[in-house]
Image 1 (cartoon, helix red, strand yellow):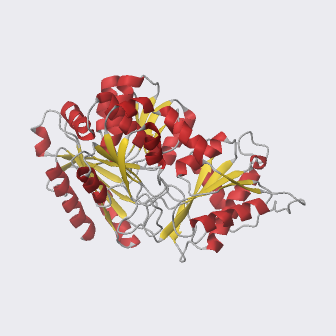
Image 2 (cartoon, one colour):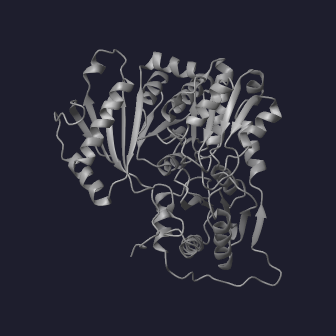
Image 3 (cartoon, rainbow, N blue to C red):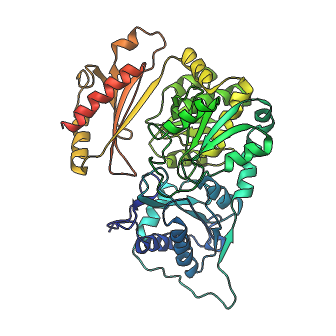
Length: 487
């Protein structure tokens, strides 16, 4: 039987603190993770003797929840390396792989509002738990752990460690810090009160890069924002960029695995364009091998970039776990998703907002261009691609009815902004390709598509669209909102 409260969605289990996310339920989740690891006894990578890594972000109670997990896991006979301070999710993932542990637990709710917290499970390879792992963990929820044991006299099963030094060295080695240091560029860094803290600022201080930072102090209330690096949460970064004469603003989310940005004029640069800038640069300058992946809700500009460079583009479901699956199966250059989660296989099979922030600075330094100029170059070469997303808080029954209604639409139906439906895809949600009259007048216009999908992490209906102009995007979002609320 499924657990009535604990459900691992797109990326772990999340719940409202003191409602679903309680110490009792966190301990149940930790017991299930311990049971899973014990079930892998004798495995080359996941044997319980290898231990688990546990870390936490800046959210309310995260440190105490992490300690509770460590106590539960260690009581079953599994040793724990527990973070001694606030830790970004990619640093925990790096620690799991570097230390050869069976897996890892991250206490975070990523970009969710302040009242939420969560538990992410990381596999031995240093990335999101694969679907088979998560299904196995869920099967143990609420069941007693048969492997409980008492520690021997003097035995310490919980060791506090610092995951940051080796992780920071790894991202510094991945980027060209000398090039960034010589660029003469100035940056604004925004950690959104989250686990990114002063990490980027400390790196820039060490190499002498001009910068300012905002919202670098940990604050579990995330005052005035949700710690997701999109509009409107990123407005303060744009204002700080303009006020301080910076060439770009670099932003990480609550647990620092996602990236957001603004250009030199304070304009929001969406994750699609960040991914496109990074991909174009890597293919042009690095020559690293491998296919490229993108989630179902991510820009088609990536397809055009891959086509130009003769690279395979793989489309997959929404959630970085699908990127991880591919990275464990074959050679992948980059993988990413709409939310700003982008990963490089040669670093980790994991999203990393801090690394990607350094790499954006790297691209700007190498090209000697502001972030806005880099985006303009891409739009000129591959056609204007504009993206939009809205989240609707509606009851689950209404959400499901909207999606069912959408699936029933037929080619030719002019439901969204009067644009006829060309075709429908159902890889993850309901996606429509639309016949956009505006696009036919532009030789390099982006394909127009619209996607409706139930969130895997929050009680939301998400609506995404991409088209060839901001005006077209706004019309489509308004039309889709009316469609959803009127269903």
